[in-house]
Length: 432
Image 1: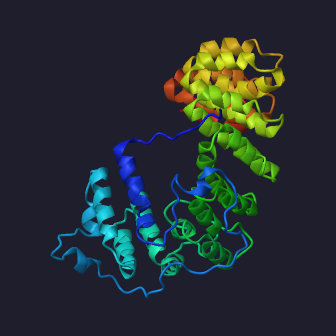
Image 2 (image 1 turned 135 degrees about the horizontal axis):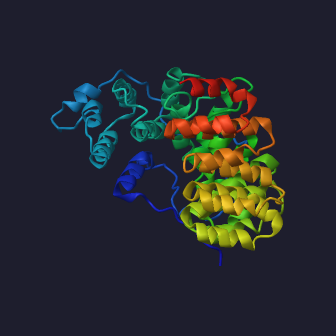
Image 3 (image 1 turned 180 degrees about the vertical axis):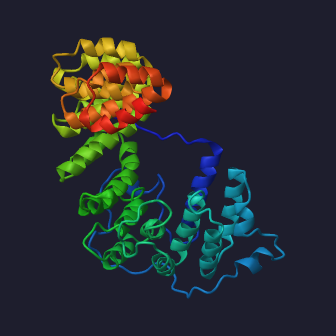
């Protein structure tokens, strides 16, 4: 049987926020189900939605009036407005109030609600609540919502904006809501409204809206994106749904990725997701991959998670691996060991002098030991042959030692050769 993977929820607060975040699913009788009962969620088979299909707007096209939020919040119903809700410090209570507030909005009231929310100056701190408003509006009237988000967009027209609260975040949230009910229309809008030669950030929103109901179409759109931050964002949104299908299905999905660079990154993220739930099973999955960068990166991710959780088990796994796979796993192992016990890590690395990746092991050890034992980090880091890596590694360890013990740092400088690029910093340490 294939191992199935579930993502644990972080308590009642997350459940409430998540349900509110996707409130748009209940705002229209014509919405398409995206929960576990959806046929498209039982794998990544194709749906009737085509990546090149024609589009029509499923949302209303009513005009967006000026805000009536202030008058609504003072109505006899006792409903609270955005400003009042934003002052609630309890996140659970605030999310409940926001959910009630959104359910009472009509399509032409969202612009005013968003303006009031932005006026609180808490768009970044309360991004989940901001996204609730955007997704709910995107369900009711996506064109009006996109007209608003693009006119208030810091970058505009689907360029790089990231997830910091500005840029294309708002448009992506609206497109995600739209794509969950009418993917063809959302996809057509995303393509027609993107300008420039850079990656189309609007497509990230479409992928986000499809991941729970049509993994196949979401994957096709992902592969349409060039190597970019936008493609990384889309992949991050997609991977949790891929891993929920199971290990065999995840491997099958990975085999559909044609771009080698994308496949390597996807393998690493799948391994990371699996290893959070069960490192041992994740390790077994990683070893099913063919030799190459995808396997190497997957093993590296498993080791990083496993070593942080249980170093003894991670070491046992490391020692059981073929020599080629040990090269992939050992850097993360020694880095984690050095953070916890630098002396033990130094003993371990001394036995690896003939390893083909010894220089990388030196660097990983030194970086791991920089805070736990900066003197050991300096001694081993100074053996790194690559001058750039040596300067960077020694510089970090030297600064760490200087902060902990200035006299010891000066003594080490006077007794050891220091990378030339650090001479200015060293002079200041000696003078101060």
